[in-house]
Image (cartoon, rainbow, N blue to C red; front, side, top):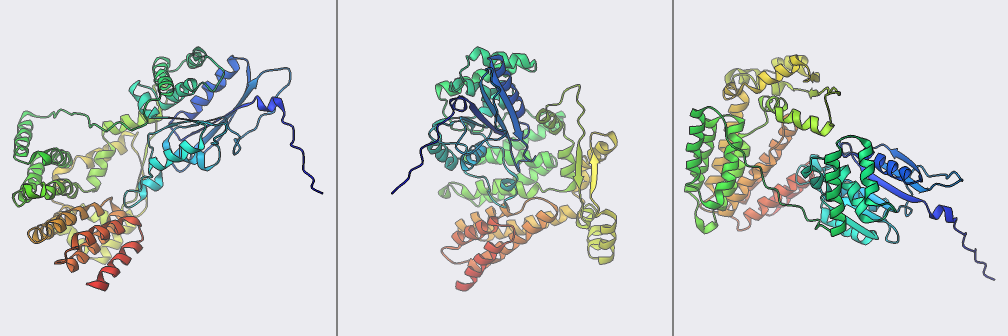
Length: 511
Protein backbone atom coordinates (compact mmCIF):
# COMPACT_ATOMS: atom_id res chain seq x y z
CA UNK A 1 0.00 0.00 0.00
CA UNK A 2 1.46 3.35 -1.06
CA UNK A 3 0.82 6.42 1.02
CA UNK A 4 1.22 9.86 -0.50
CA UNK A 5 1.36 13.01 1.56
CA UNK A 6 -1.13 15.61 0.48
CA UNK A 7 0.50 18.88 -0.62
CA UNK A 8 0.57 21.48 2.08
CA UNK A 9 -1.93 24.21 1.25
CA UNK A 10 -0.28 27.53 0.56
CA UNK A 11 -1.18 30.60 2.53
CA UNK A 12 -2.72 33.17 0.18
CA UNK A 13 -1.26 35.95 2.32
CA UNK A 14 2.25 34.58 1.88
CA UNK A 15 1.77 34.38 -1.88
CA UNK A 16 1.02 38.11 -1.91
CA UNK A 17 4.44 39.03 -0.49
CA UNK A 18 6.80 40.61 -3.04
CA UNK A 19 10.44 39.75 -2.42
CA UNK A 20 13.33 41.82 -3.76
CA UNK A 21 17.06 41.15 -3.32
CA UNK A 22 19.61 43.85 -4.16
CA UNK A 23 23.28 42.88 -4.46
CA UNK A 24 25.76 45.76 -4.51
CA UNK A 25 29.26 46.65 -3.38
CA UNK A 26 30.45 49.77 -1.61
CA UNK A 27 29.87 53.04 -3.45
CA UNK A 28 27.10 51.73 -5.70
CA UNK A 29 24.25 53.15 -3.64
CA UNK A 30 22.62 49.89 -2.60
CA UNK A 31 21.39 51.48 0.61
CA UNK A 32 19.93 54.45 -1.26
CA UNK A 33 18.14 52.15 -3.70
CA UNK A 34 16.72 50.15 -0.80
CA UNK A 35 15.46 53.31 0.90
CA UNK A 36 13.75 54.44 -2.30
CA UNK A 37 11.95 51.11 -2.70
CA UNK A 38 10.92 51.08 0.96
CA UNK A 39 9.65 54.68 0.73
CA UNK A 40 7.77 53.86 -2.48
CA UNK A 41 6.04 50.81 -1.00
CA UNK A 42 4.89 52.57 2.16
CA UNK A 43 3.66 55.60 0.25
CA UNK A 44 1.53 53.24 -1.85
CA UNK A 45 -0.09 51.63 1.18
CA UNK A 46 2.14 48.59 1.50
CA UNK A 47 3.65 47.10 4.62
CA UNK A 48 7.38 46.83 4.00
CA UNK A 49 10.55 45.62 5.69
CA UNK A 50 14.15 46.12 4.53
CA UNK A 51 17.22 44.36 5.91
CA UNK A 52 20.84 44.03 4.84
CA UNK A 53 23.65 41.54 5.27
CA UNK A 54 26.87 43.51 5.07
CA UNK A 55 29.69 42.41 2.81
CA UNK A 56 33.36 43.40 2.95
CA UNK A 57 34.87 46.46 1.32
CA UNK A 58 37.31 46.55 -1.60
CA UNK A 59 35.42 44.02 -3.76
CA UNK A 60 35.93 40.97 -1.54
CA UNK A 61 32.23 40.74 -0.82
CA UNK A 62 28.92 42.39 -1.68
CA UNK A 63 26.15 43.58 0.61
CA UNK A 64 22.78 41.89 0.13
CA UNK A 65 19.83 44.16 0.76
CA UNK A 66 16.51 42.36 1.12
CA UNK A 67 13.04 43.84 0.90
CA UNK A 68 9.67 42.22 1.48
CA UNK A 69 6.34 44.01 0.97
CA UNK A 70 2.65 43.30 0.74
CA UNK A 71 -0.58 45.36 0.81
CA UNK A 72 -1.22 46.64 4.33
CA UNK A 73 -4.16 45.11 6.21
CA UNK A 74 -5.46 44.76 9.74
CA UNK A 75 -3.08 41.84 10.25
CA UNK A 76 0.61 42.51 10.89
CA UNK A 77 2.75 40.43 8.50
CA UNK A 78 5.84 38.50 9.57
CA UNK A 79 8.60 39.09 7.05
CA UNK A 80 11.82 37.17 6.50
CA UNK A 81 15.18 38.74 7.24
CA UNK A 82 17.13 37.32 4.29
CA UNK A 83 16.42 35.91 0.83
CA UNK A 84 16.01 32.17 0.37
CA UNK A 85 16.94 30.05 -2.63
CA UNK A 86 14.16 29.82 -5.18
CA UNK A 87 12.00 32.35 -3.34
CA UNK A 88 12.85 35.78 -4.79
CA UNK A 89 10.68 37.76 -7.22
CA UNK A 90 13.22 40.41 -8.23
CA UNK A 91 17.00 40.36 -8.09
CA UNK A 92 18.88 43.60 -8.78
CA UNK A 93 22.64 43.17 -9.28
CA UNK A 94 24.77 46.30 -9.52
CA UNK A 95 27.63 44.64 -11.39
CA UNK A 96 28.03 41.78 -13.87
CA UNK A 97 29.78 39.32 -11.58
CA UNK A 98 27.13 39.92 -8.94
CA UNK A 99 24.63 38.77 -11.57
CA UNK A 100 26.57 35.52 -11.70
CA UNK A 101 26.73 35.18 -7.92
CA UNK A 102 22.98 35.69 -7.64
CA UNK A 103 22.45 32.85 -10.12
CA UNK A 104 24.95 30.59 -8.33
CA UNK A 105 23.31 31.19 -4.94
CA UNK A 106 19.95 30.10 -6.28
CA UNK A 107 18.20 33.46 -5.90
CA UNK A 108 17.31 33.47 -9.61
CA UNK A 109 14.78 30.90 -10.87
CA UNK A 110 13.09 30.59 -14.27
CA UNK A 111 9.58 30.23 -12.82
CA UNK A 112 9.40 33.64 -11.14
CA UNK A 113 12.52 35.82 -10.96
CA UNK A 114 13.02 39.07 -12.83
CA UNK A 115 16.79 39.68 -12.95
CA UNK A 116 17.99 43.25 -13.47
CA UNK A 117 21.73 43.71 -13.80
CA UNK A 118 24.44 46.08 -14.95
CA UNK A 119 26.94 44.82 -17.51
CA UNK A 120 29.82 47.01 -16.33
CA UNK A 121 32.65 45.53 -14.29
CA UNK A 122 34.10 46.53 -10.91
CA UNK A 123 37.04 44.16 -10.69
CA UNK A 124 37.40 41.91 -7.67
CA UNK A 125 40.66 41.73 -5.72
CA UNK A 126 41.29 38.22 -7.10
CA UNK A 127 41.01 39.61 -10.64
CA UNK A 128 43.40 42.46 -9.95
CA UNK A 129 46.07 40.35 -8.24
CA UNK A 130 46.27 37.67 -10.95
CA UNK A 131 49.72 37.77 -12.60
CA UNK A 132 48.13 37.76 -16.08
CA UNK A 133 44.66 38.60 -17.31
CA UNK A 134 42.53 37.48 -14.37
CA UNK A 135 39.34 39.24 -15.48
CA UNK A 136 36.36 36.88 -15.41
CA UNK A 137 34.44 36.51 -18.67
CA UNK A 138 31.07 38.24 -18.73
CA UNK A 139 29.77 36.18 -21.66
CA UNK A 140 29.53 33.05 -19.53
CA UNK A 141 27.62 34.94 -16.84
CA UNK A 142 25.23 36.36 -19.42
CA UNK A 143 24.52 32.90 -20.84
CA UNK A 144 23.81 31.48 -17.38
CA UNK A 145 21.53 34.41 -16.52
CA UNK A 146 19.52 33.95 -19.70
CA UNK A 147 18.78 30.36 -18.70
CA UNK A 148 18.17 31.02 -14.99
CA UNK A 149 15.87 34.06 -15.07
CA UNK A 150 12.25 34.31 -16.10
CA UNK A 151 12.90 37.84 -17.35
CA UNK A 152 16.39 39.26 -17.88
CA UNK A 153 17.19 42.97 -18.16
CA UNK A 154 20.86 43.79 -18.77
CA UNK A 155 22.42 47.12 -19.71
CA UNK A 156 25.38 49.23 -18.67
CA UNK A 157 23.47 50.90 -15.87
CA UNK A 158 26.61 52.52 -14.51
CA UNK A 159 27.32 54.32 -17.78
CA UNK A 160 23.68 55.37 -18.12
CA UNK A 161 23.85 56.95 -14.66
CA UNK A 162 27.26 58.59 -15.06
CA UNK A 163 26.21 60.20 -18.34
CA UNK A 164 23.42 61.93 -16.40
CA UNK A 165 25.68 63.00 -13.54
CA UNK A 166 24.28 60.45 -11.11
CA UNK A 167 25.13 57.02 -9.68
CA UNK A 168 24.03 53.53 -10.62
CA UNK A 169 21.31 53.24 -7.96
CA UNK A 170 19.23 55.77 -9.91
CA UNK A 171 19.35 53.90 -13.23
CA UNK A 172 18.68 50.57 -11.49
CA UNK A 173 15.61 52.10 -9.83
CA UNK A 174 14.45 53.22 -13.26
CA UNK A 175 14.99 49.72 -14.66
CA UNK A 176 12.93 48.29 -11.81
CA UNK A 177 10.10 50.66 -12.73
CA UNK A 178 10.43 49.82 -16.41
CA UNK A 179 10.34 46.08 -15.70
CA UNK A 180 6.72 46.44 -14.55
CA UNK A 181 7.13 43.85 -11.83
CA UNK A 182 5.93 46.13 -9.02
CA UNK A 183 2.29 47.29 -9.01
CA UNK A 184 3.18 50.98 -8.90
CA UNK A 185 3.03 53.72 -11.53
CA UNK A 186 6.15 55.45 -12.82
CA UNK A 187 5.12 58.69 -11.11
CA UNK A 188 5.21 56.93 -7.74
CA UNK A 189 8.79 55.83 -8.34
CA UNK A 190 9.84 59.34 -9.28
CA UNK A 191 8.09 60.79 -6.23
CA UNK A 192 10.16 58.49 -4.01
CA UNK A 193 13.31 60.08 -5.46
CA UNK A 194 11.92 63.58 -4.88
CA UNK A 195 11.15 62.76 -1.25
CA UNK A 196 14.81 61.92 -0.65
CA UNK A 197 15.70 65.55 -1.42
CA UNK A 198 19.28 64.80 -2.54
CA UNK A 199 20.55 65.11 -6.12
CA UNK A 200 16.98 64.92 -7.33
CA UNK A 201 17.42 66.29 -10.85
CA UNK A 202 20.39 64.11 -11.77
CA UNK A 203 18.78 61.06 -10.16
CA UNK A 204 15.57 61.57 -12.15
CA UNK A 205 17.55 61.82 -15.39
CA UNK A 206 19.39 58.59 -14.63
CA UNK A 207 16.09 57.00 -13.56
CA UNK A 208 14.61 57.86 -16.95
CA UNK A 209 17.63 56.35 -18.75
CA UNK A 210 17.31 53.13 -16.77
CA UNK A 211 13.54 53.02 -17.38
CA UNK A 212 14.03 53.39 -21.14
CA UNK A 213 16.72 50.68 -21.13
CA UNK A 214 14.31 48.24 -19.47
CA UNK A 215 11.35 49.11 -21.70
CA UNK A 216 13.08 49.36 -25.07
CA UNK A 217 15.65 46.64 -24.48
CA UNK A 218 18.86 48.59 -24.98
CA UNK A 219 21.56 46.19 -26.25
CA UNK A 220 23.77 45.06 -23.39
CA UNK A 221 26.96 45.22 -25.45
CA UNK A 222 29.61 47.45 -23.99
CA UNK A 223 30.33 50.76 -25.69
CA UNK A 224 33.91 50.78 -27.08
CA UNK A 225 36.22 52.88 -24.95
CA UNK A 226 37.24 56.15 -26.57
CA UNK A 227 40.07 57.87 -24.69
CA UNK A 228 39.37 61.54 -24.05
CA UNK A 229 41.21 64.00 -26.22
CA UNK A 230 43.59 66.07 -24.15
CA UNK A 231 45.26 69.30 -25.09
CA UNK A 232 48.89 69.71 -24.11
CA UNK A 233 49.51 72.74 -21.91
CA UNK A 234 52.76 74.16 -20.59
CA UNK A 235 55.52 76.69 -21.28
CA UNK A 236 55.79 77.66 -24.97
CA UNK A 237 59.31 76.24 -25.26
CA UNK A 238 58.20 72.81 -24.05
CA UNK A 239 55.12 72.89 -26.26
CA UNK A 240 57.39 73.50 -29.25
CA UNK A 241 59.55 70.54 -28.25
CA UNK A 242 56.44 68.39 -27.96
CA UNK A 243 55.29 69.47 -31.41
CA UNK A 244 58.70 68.51 -32.77
CA UNK A 245 58.28 65.02 -31.33
CA UNK A 246 54.83 64.79 -32.88
CA UNK A 247 56.35 65.56 -36.27
CA UNK A 248 58.77 62.70 -35.77
CA UNK A 249 55.78 60.43 -35.20
CA UNK A 250 54.49 61.33 -38.66
CA UNK A 251 57.44 59.42 -40.12
CA UNK A 252 56.10 56.24 -38.55
CA UNK A 253 53.68 53.92 -40.41
CA UNK A 254 50.03 54.84 -39.93
CA UNK A 255 49.36 51.58 -38.08
CA UNK A 256 52.04 52.48 -35.52
CA UNK A 257 51.32 56.16 -34.93
CA UNK A 258 48.44 55.86 -32.44
CA UNK A 259 50.18 53.45 -30.10
CA UNK A 260 53.48 55.31 -30.46
CA UNK A 261 51.77 58.57 -29.53
CA UNK A 262 50.27 56.92 -26.45
CA UNK A 263 53.71 55.63 -25.49
CA UNK A 264 55.26 59.04 -26.06
CA UNK A 265 52.73 60.74 -23.80
CA UNK A 266 53.32 58.11 -21.14
CA UNK A 267 57.10 58.55 -20.98
CA UNK A 268 56.86 62.35 -21.04
CA UNK A 269 54.35 62.28 -18.20
CA UNK A 270 56.78 60.04 -16.32
CA UNK A 271 59.84 62.23 -16.86
CA UNK A 272 60.13 65.03 -19.43
CA UNK A 273 60.29 65.88 -23.15
CA UNK A 274 63.93 64.81 -23.45
CA UNK A 275 62.95 61.39 -22.12
CA UNK A 276 60.26 61.28 -24.80
CA UNK A 277 62.89 61.96 -27.46
CA UNK A 278 64.91 59.03 -26.13
CA UNK A 279 61.81 56.84 -26.48
CA UNK A 280 61.43 57.84 -30.13
CA UNK A 281 65.14 57.18 -30.74
CA UNK A 282 64.74 53.58 -29.59
CA UNK A 283 61.51 53.13 -31.53
CA UNK A 284 63.06 54.59 -34.69
CA UNK A 285 65.84 52.01 -34.44
CA UNK A 286 63.22 49.26 -34.51
CA UNK A 287 61.32 50.93 -37.36
CA UNK A 288 64.48 51.18 -39.46
CA UNK A 289 64.91 47.40 -39.28
CA UNK A 290 61.24 46.55 -39.82
CA UNK A 291 59.23 46.33 -43.05
CA UNK A 292 55.68 46.43 -44.35
CA UNK A 293 56.01 42.77 -45.32
CA UNK A 294 55.21 41.94 -41.70
CA UNK A 295 52.59 44.72 -41.32
CA UNK A 296 55.01 46.56 -39.00
CA UNK A 297 54.17 44.13 -36.18
CA UNK A 298 57.61 44.44 -34.60
CA UNK A 299 57.42 48.25 -34.46
CA UNK A 300 53.87 48.19 -33.05
CA UNK A 301 54.87 45.75 -30.33
CA UNK A 302 58.04 47.67 -29.51
CA UNK A 303 56.10 50.96 -29.28
CA UNK A 304 54.05 49.56 -26.43
CA UNK A 305 56.63 47.66 -24.45
CA UNK A 306 59.54 50.09 -24.74
CA UNK A 307 57.27 52.73 -23.19
CA UNK A 308 56.31 50.33 -20.41
CA UNK A 309 59.98 49.57 -19.77
CA UNK A 310 60.89 53.25 -19.57
CA UNK A 311 58.04 54.02 -17.17
CA UNK A 312 58.88 51.97 -14.10
CA UNK A 313 57.31 52.24 -10.66
CA UNK A 314 59.75 53.93 -8.33
CA UNK A 315 59.04 55.91 -5.15
CA UNK A 316 59.04 59.19 -7.07
CA UNK A 317 56.31 57.95 -9.40
CA UNK A 318 54.21 56.50 -6.58
CA UNK A 319 54.45 59.79 -4.67
CA UNK A 320 53.57 61.78 -7.79
CA UNK A 321 50.48 59.68 -8.56
CA UNK A 322 49.26 59.80 -4.96
CA UNK A 323 49.35 63.60 -4.81
CA UNK A 324 47.75 64.47 -8.14
CA UNK A 325 44.59 66.56 -7.97
CA UNK A 326 42.80 64.16 -10.33
CA UNK A 327 43.25 61.36 -7.80
CA UNK A 328 41.83 63.39 -4.94
CA UNK A 329 38.90 64.41 -7.14
CA UNK A 330 38.19 60.79 -8.03
CA UNK A 331 38.32 59.71 -4.38
CA UNK A 332 35.94 62.50 -3.34
CA UNK A 333 33.52 61.52 -6.12
CA UNK A 334 33.63 57.83 -5.21
CA UNK A 335 33.14 58.55 -1.50
CA UNK A 336 30.34 61.03 -2.18
CA UNK A 337 31.83 63.73 0.01
CA UNK A 338 30.37 67.21 0.34
CA UNK A 339 31.10 70.44 2.17
CA UNK A 340 29.57 69.07 5.37
CA UNK A 341 31.65 65.87 5.33
CA UNK A 342 35.31 65.49 6.22
CA UNK A 343 37.44 62.98 4.32
CA UNK A 344 40.61 61.65 5.92
CA UNK A 345 43.00 59.78 3.63
CA UNK A 346 45.72 57.42 4.84
CA UNK A 347 48.48 56.08 2.57
CA UNK A 348 50.31 52.90 3.57
CA UNK A 349 54.04 52.56 2.83
CA UNK A 350 56.33 49.69 3.72
CA UNK A 351 59.69 50.41 2.06
CA UNK A 352 62.36 47.73 2.02
CA UNK A 353 66.05 48.49 2.23
CA UNK A 354 66.25 47.86 -1.53
CA UNK A 355 63.74 50.65 -2.21
CA UNK A 356 65.59 53.07 0.05
CA UNK A 357 69.01 52.41 -1.46
CA UNK A 358 67.53 52.67 -4.96
CA UNK A 359 67.07 56.39 -4.27
CA UNK A 360 70.78 56.93 -3.69
CA UNK A 361 73.07 58.23 -6.45
CA UNK A 362 74.03 55.29 -8.65
CA UNK A 363 77.63 54.72 -7.48
CA UNK A 364 76.87 55.34 -3.83
CA UNK A 365 73.80 53.10 -4.01
CA UNK A 366 75.80 50.27 -5.56
CA UNK A 367 78.31 50.41 -2.69
CA UNK A 368 75.57 50.38 -0.06
CA UNK A 369 73.73 47.54 -1.79
CA UNK A 370 76.91 45.44 -1.77
CA UNK A 371 77.28 45.87 2.00
CA UNK A 372 75.22 43.44 4.08
CA UNK A 373 75.87 45.54 7.20
CA UNK A 374 74.58 48.74 5.63
CA UNK A 375 71.51 47.02 4.17
CA UNK A 376 70.71 45.56 7.58
CA UNK A 377 70.95 49.07 9.04
CA UNK A 378 68.49 50.41 6.46
CA UNK A 379 66.11 47.56 7.22
CA UNK A 380 66.18 48.42 10.92
CA UNK A 381 65.51 52.07 10.17
CA UNK A 382 62.82 51.75 7.48
CA UNK A 383 61.30 48.26 7.57
CA UNK A 384 58.40 49.30 9.78
CA UNK A 385 55.24 50.22 7.89
CA UNK A 386 54.41 53.89 7.56
CA UNK A 387 50.97 55.50 7.56
CA UNK A 388 50.95 58.91 5.94
CA UNK A 389 47.75 60.90 6.36
CA UNK A 390 47.79 62.89 3.14
CA UNK A 391 44.79 64.99 4.13
CA UNK A 392 47.25 66.74 6.44
CA UNK A 393 49.65 69.37 5.06
CA UNK A 394 52.83 67.79 6.41
CA UNK A 395 52.32 64.33 4.87
CA UNK A 396 50.99 65.77 1.61
CA UNK A 397 54.00 68.07 1.19
CA UNK A 398 56.38 65.20 1.90
CA UNK A 399 54.94 63.13 -0.93
CA UNK A 400 54.45 66.13 -3.19
CA UNK A 401 58.13 67.06 -2.92
CA UNK A 402 59.18 63.46 -3.56
CA UNK A 403 56.93 63.30 -6.61
CA UNK A 404 58.54 66.44 -8.01
CA UNK A 405 62.12 65.10 -7.91
CA UNK A 406 62.06 63.95 -11.54
CA UNK A 407 65.38 65.50 -12.52
CA UNK A 408 67.17 63.70 -9.69
CA UNK A 409 65.59 60.38 -10.73
CA UNK A 410 68.00 60.00 -13.69
CA UNK A 411 70.98 59.96 -11.29
CA UNK A 412 69.66 57.24 -9.00
CA UNK A 413 70.74 53.63 -8.66
CA UNK A 414 67.24 52.48 -9.63
CA UNK A 415 67.37 54.35 -12.94
CA UNK A 416 70.79 52.98 -13.84
CA UNK A 417 69.57 49.44 -13.11
CA UNK A 418 66.41 49.94 -15.18
CA UNK A 419 68.34 51.38 -18.13
CA UNK A 420 70.83 48.48 -18.10
CA UNK A 421 67.97 45.97 -17.93
CA UNK A 422 66.12 47.71 -20.79
CA UNK A 423 69.18 47.86 -23.01
CA UNK A 424 70.01 44.17 -22.50
CA UNK A 425 66.40 43.19 -23.30
CA UNK A 426 66.27 45.50 -26.34
CA UNK A 427 69.53 44.08 -27.69
CA UNK A 428 68.32 40.50 -27.21
CA UNK A 429 65.13 41.26 -29.15
CA UNK A 430 66.85 42.98 -32.05
CA UNK A 431 69.62 40.37 -32.41
CA UNK A 432 67.16 37.69 -33.49
CA UNK A 433 65.06 39.92 -35.78
CA UNK A 434 66.80 39.00 -39.02
CA UNK A 435 66.80 35.23 -38.39
CA UNK A 436 63.40 34.89 -36.65
CA UNK A 437 61.04 37.85 -36.90
CA UNK A 438 58.26 36.14 -34.94
CA UNK A 439 60.64 35.31 -32.10
CA UNK A 440 61.74 38.96 -31.89
CA UNK A 441 58.10 40.00 -31.53
CA UNK A 442 57.55 37.50 -28.71
CA UNK A 443 60.71 38.62 -26.91
CA UNK A 444 59.44 42.21 -26.94
CA UNK A 445 56.12 40.97 -25.51
CA UNK A 446 57.97 39.32 -22.62
CA UNK A 447 58.25 42.77 -21.06
CA UNK A 448 54.64 42.21 -20.01
CA UNK A 449 55.98 39.99 -17.24
CA UNK A 450 57.58 42.92 -15.40
CA UNK A 451 55.18 44.89 -13.24
CA UNK A 452 54.60 46.45 -9.84
CA UNK A 453 57.15 47.48 -7.27
CA UNK A 454 58.82 46.12 -4.15
CA UNK A 455 58.41 42.34 -3.73
CA UNK A 456 56.01 42.09 -6.69
CA UNK A 457 58.59 43.70 -8.97
CA UNK A 458 61.36 41.44 -7.70
CA UNK A 459 59.28 38.32 -8.42
CA UNK A 460 58.36 39.56 -11.88
CA UNK A 461 62.03 40.17 -12.71
CA UNK A 462 62.78 36.57 -11.76
CA UNK A 463 60.03 35.28 -14.07
CA UNK A 464 61.24 37.49 -16.90
CA UNK A 465 64.80 36.25 -16.52
CA UNK A 466 63.67 32.61 -16.60
CA UNK A 467 61.66 33.08 -19.78
CA UNK A 468 64.40 35.04 -21.55
CA UNK A 469 67.11 32.53 -20.63
CA UNK A 470 64.95 29.62 -21.79
CA UNK A 471 64.30 31.47 -25.07
CA UNK A 472 68.05 31.27 -25.73
CA UNK A 473 67.73 27.48 -25.81
CA UNK A 474 65.00 27.71 -28.44
CA UNK A 475 66.88 29.79 -30.99
CA UNK A 476 67.02 28.17 -34.39
CA UNK A 477 63.85 26.12 -33.96
CA UNK A 478 60.89 26.74 -36.26
CA UNK A 479 58.53 26.79 -33.27
CA UNK A 480 60.70 29.03 -31.07
CA UNK A 481 58.21 31.92 -31.09
CA UNK A 482 55.33 29.61 -30.18
CA UNK A 483 57.23 28.17 -27.24
CA UNK A 484 58.25 31.59 -25.93
CA UNK A 485 54.58 32.62 -26.03
CA UNK A 486 53.69 29.44 -24.08
CA UNK A 487 56.40 30.16 -21.51
CA UNK A 488 55.11 33.70 -21.01
CA UNK A 489 51.52 32.53 -20.56
CA UNK A 490 52.70 29.91 -18.07
CA UNK A 491 54.55 32.60 -16.14
CA UNK A 492 51.35 34.65 -15.98
CA UNK A 493 49.22 31.79 -14.68
CA UNK A 494 50.27 31.65 -11.05
CA UNK A 495 52.50 33.59 -8.64
CA UNK A 496 54.28 30.44 -7.42
CA UNK A 497 55.83 29.82 -10.86
CA UNK A 498 54.86 26.13 -10.84
CA UNK A 499 53.36 26.34 -14.32
CA UNK A 500 56.43 28.19 -15.59
CA UNK A 501 58.87 25.71 -14.09
CA UNK A 502 56.90 22.88 -15.67
CA UNK A 503 57.01 24.55 -19.09
CA UNK A 504 60.76 25.16 -18.77
CA UNK A 505 61.30 21.51 -17.86
CA UNK A 506 59.38 20.51 -20.98
CA UNK A 507 61.57 22.75 -23.16
CA UNK A 508 64.76 21.34 -21.65
CA UNK A 509 63.52 17.82 -22.28
CA UNK A 510 63.52 18.27 -26.06
CA UNK A 511 66.23 20.88 -26.63
